[in-house]
Image (cartoon, rainbow, N blue to C red):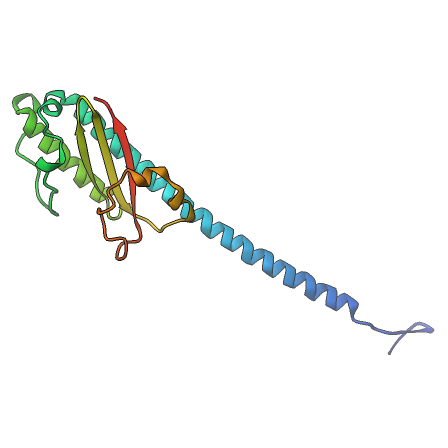
Length: 180
């Protein structure tokens, strides 16, 4: 009991309980905000990787259009491609004006894939198609899976055997098609 002037006052503790309830509510709100921030950062990273994959796809499409004779001869089709190993140099075709269209295509694919490997974690890609039917470019990269990936219609375009789905659950694919 506390004496305040000539009156006696009792403490009931309701103010302290209100403060504790407010702190608990604020703690739950902070945890929710941290979770939202984490999800936002993950989606931002995925969007960035897809933007990089889109830029590389457009780059290869421009290379194919610039070497239309090589595209007509089939130099950009998958059976004729060899993926460059780490540190392997490109073909010795320094001046595209003095090279055969097939040599330009080999150099284009080598430089494109080396750029993919350097720009993205696990970045690699492939191209298939023809001038008459169009080409499909597929860019693969490592990223954490999200819930919306199962609903992505582009995932059906990518080869299901590109990576073992049990061992590599984080391999994503970005596919685009173009006509030269």
